Image 1 (cartoon, rainbow, N blue to C red):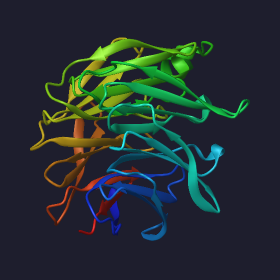
Image 2 (image 1 turned 90 degrees about the vertical axis):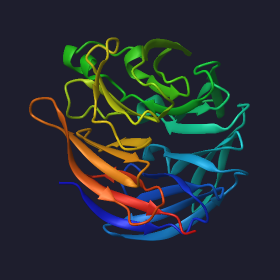
Image 3 (image 1 turned 180 degrees about the horizontal axis):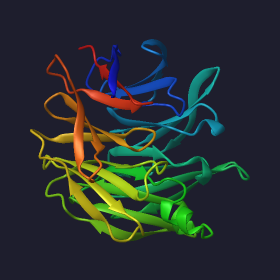
Image 4 (image 1 turned 90 degrees about the horizontal axis):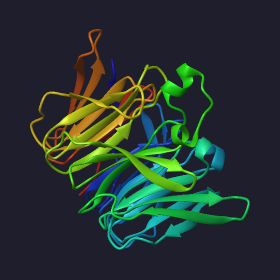
Length: 323
């Protein structure tokens, strides 16, 4: 059973838009319309404030931790059209700013460690960017997909480093099995992209949503025999997509939610899905023995604020702003 471990008062001065823990679950980052990213140390049910990262000039929509092999690094994206990469060297400082979008940068996500220090981001200008730090020449290299989603990109998520199909077949890895991302946008589409020698090619479109898609999350492939993606939409649907060949995707729709569904998040083992909706409720879902997905737990807030929750080691945290 998944339990609520802690409700964290972040002291943000405006609405919180995202919260995420690092690889080990020891650090929590939050971001808000107050333009600030906050870092907390988390241990058990206790937490302590570590730093405020100030550098954005607009609401900060999302934060993403890099793999710890690269150091203590986090990326944040904002309405100010920028992604800032922050690194801790005793103190948190700016490592890099990406300023190559014409609209709000709505989402950012670091890739698996095997892909190097790489992040993907999506913008209201409709473009996706994949940005990689090349250590041998000490520069950031950019690949941009213009027109990825009409009207704007809302979410992006990386696939695990190697598909389960590749593992089971014991075939040699290829670029297509190693670097894949899913993106979602205001065109009601989810698109699957693969890296083809430095260029990115669209290989699939998932089309069952009827309104803006607000989030997409690729499941860790640690304990399941197929690849899965979860998507959340303003049409009040959450869809779990499954495939064994990365080409043909089978949708499974959870029961219709009461309001807009804002976010989806997988547990580290990929067997529990957390869903955050517009009625201040987080529900946790798990697949039954017959393949059906059932709600195993609910966490309801006691304030009208939108909750923002995350899963870490099968425990659930909820963050709240203080305004």
